[in-house]
Image (cartoon, rainbow, N blue to C red; front, side, top):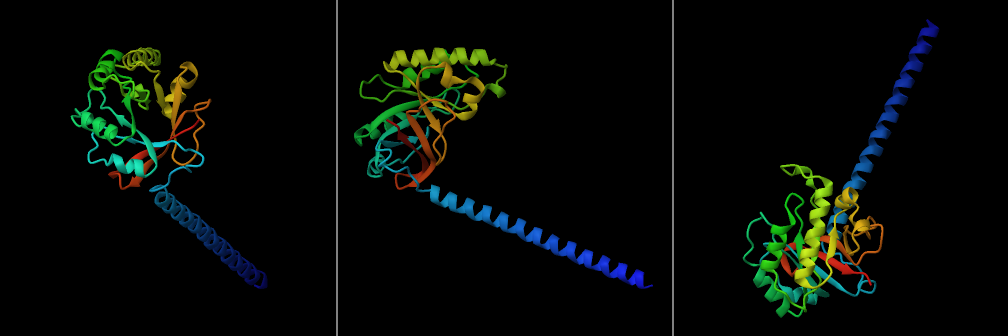
Length: 247
């Protein structure tokens, strides 16, 4: 009987010990989750108005999305922006009748202006370059054109091979450069780079994308960096993409 009571007491202590350990593990996990939530909330709040230090990056600017309205380009200048890139609607997207007005307003505000065309890997180069040449006037005052490389061909119907994507991209780059008279800048997404290795295969200036942290996925120096994709400011009711230049 004594051995049975001792065993019972030991079993009870063991259960209490395990229960105590379980509570501590639960508390630690809860604390870790709380820290993650607080950090995420702080990061989101801080990023709303964060821009890279002008001492490190004196040349800064913004991207204005296709279809945007009500952008106050003078305010972009007041924020320290020297330039804007206006995104052109891709072939197949909704028409953007406000593009010409934005181009005129940005120029009038004293900003340097460039145009971004979003490459569609499911389409041939010819209709895409035709959209660019029809919408973007030739001008020596414009910044070099940029081609955004974000979308992969995974959802194309009919299917498009990687080799075909790369061939059409090269054709598009050449056609846009012929129209603008300037070398294009490749606004290169990380997934596109991993799939196609474009930074290695095409000798053009790079524009990389990563919120807050300097991007390194291009494998070589970049010219432009989209440092904050959701900058809140008085320049627009909607967040804008903030960009810096590396010289």
